[in-house]
Every structure is written in structure tokens, then in C-alpha cells.
Image 1 (cartoon, rainbow, N blue to C red):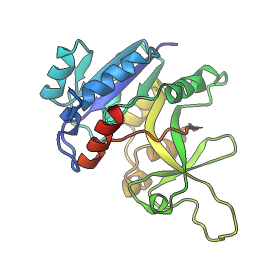
Image 2 (cartoon, helix red, strand yellow):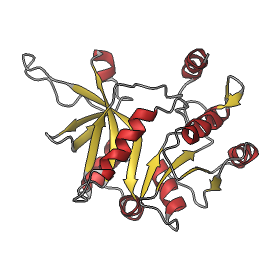
Image 3 (cartoon, rainbow, N blue to C red):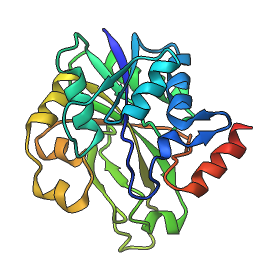
Image 4 (cartoon, rainbow, N blue to C red):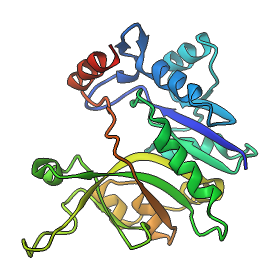
Length: 242
């Protein structure tokens, strides 16, 4: 089973422009992420795929592997699909470029899903974190996920799901972390299938897989990680790096 990591790296970002090239204690965020992913020794290859000459040159200059997107893309999955279309691989893991604190155990769990999937029931796997803070549960920037008894995803939403109509019922809430492991066929199907109404409404790309009948195995992790979406996140990351 050939397993690679792809790091989609878009230069522009609405909330924090050029965030991937911001300095994180001596190196750009994207470089920290790339080198941390390589250092896990979990992958046959690690490749950054970008729309930016600046990011391309940065990764090239540190001796990394990088590809340039040929097309404009609305999401990271599309960018990865274009990059892996002609590669001979089985599994591709999407590592977020703005998460420089790559957590090895969580990535191992995702890879293990496919190694244990004898019946080929799983199209992709992703991570979820148990959350209890009421403000985070209500926050639309936090994507929530609900699962069945085998931890296959039932739905993702920016709304609190399930809705706590009966306050006496002990309800657990899970935050979806945007780290995925895909079978190559699943991500190519995503790339070639049009967006449907649920995905368009929620603006959550993994809903497309559910709308077309793909099965997403969710893996619980205790690691929240640090996503750099704002300048404040970057300052927090700098302190944590020290």
C-alpha cells in the first residue's frame, strides 16, 4: 500500500492573507508544516501543492517536493485531486498547510483505518475531537460531526448537532478536524462530481462525499492542534513552538 501526504498550500486567505509565509520562529509556516510531516516517517512521499510562485520557491529552496496547481480550485481536495491524478498511489493523506504541529499518533490512526479495512468499506477517514465548551459548540466556524455506532460519519454541520432539545439527555459533541486520508478513487470521484445543495449551503466540502454515498470513518483524537487562521493564532503558535 503506497501512502503519500499532500499539503495544499493556497497563498491568499480571506481572514489572514499570506498566512502560510508568515514567520514562525525563523521559518515560514508552510515550511514548518512540510518538515514536520516529513519527520513523521509515515509516508512514502510528502508533496506540497500550491497556486503560488512564492510558496513553490520556498519549498524548493529547502529541498522539498512541490507541485504547481494548473487550475484554480475552490477547495484543498480539488487541488490534491489534480495533483495525484497521474500518480501511482493507494492512499493520500491531506495535511493542512496551516497546522505546523503535525501530530504523529493521529496520522498513524488514520493510516491504520485503511490497513485494517479488509472489506474495503472505507472511502476516506478523518479526525474528530470531543468538545464541551458551549461557545465552541455554537460557533459556526467550528464544524461539528455526528457518527453512527461504528464511527462512520452521518453528517457535518456548522450548527450544533445534535440539537439539544431534551436537556436531560447526555449529548456529546465532536469537532471535525480537517485532516483526511483518502483512497485515490474517492478523491478523484470528488473532483469529478458536481457540488450539491447541502455542501453549497454549509460550505463544508466533506458533505459532498456523503451526498454521493461515500463512507467516512471518523477517528477520535484528543489533540486539538493549532490552526493558524488569524494573527492571534500565529502568536499563540510562536509561544507554543518555544
